[in-house]
Length: 235
Ligand SMILES: [Zn+2]
Image (cartoon, rainbow, N blue to C red; front, side):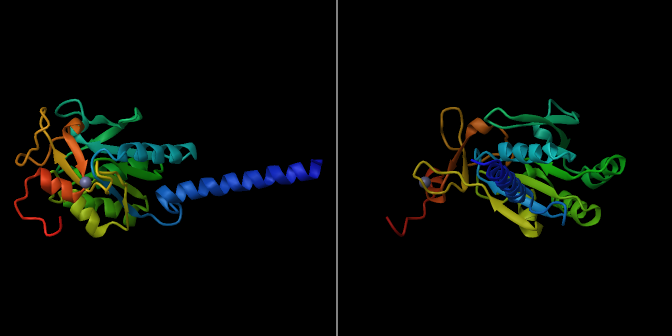
């Protein structure tokens, strides 16, 4: 290969690498420098949401951007802790601020952004945000022009919307679903809570964050496990 040709090849490789980078960035953040949006990425349990969040946050940091990470106070070390961590089942983890019901997240994020420019806010376990806090996240986008990327569950083990998920589904600019599969091969959209013996839980509080106690199922198999007495119309 001549000198000229190899330089063209190197140039082409660089361009395609840059395009791949842009594509990857847009997959997660869709033009973060142009317009700040509120994103909600949802799925059933164990779909790898936290890993996707940490990878996306890493992409921002790699580009020299500053990000702020949040997760629910259920992931802190005891009552009153301010810092906890986002942890994925494949071993990725990062420290994160903890949010609790009633906390003014807008004020905290604004104070942080006033100290030093902030390029994005990432929120794990976003289903645990209150309606008011989701509204605050919309203001982080609209008033502070900082994109907010929320990751969380859509429904609880009884098939009811979480408060934060409901409000995000209502007002987020961009909704994405991370797919995971039921044992039958269909898309898993429901979360079955099981006890240590594998027996399904039909009652109990909405919040229990032990990931080991959940099975992701399609609606059909979730209904079956929850012993829905309504007969199937189609066998
Ligand atoms: Zn199934």
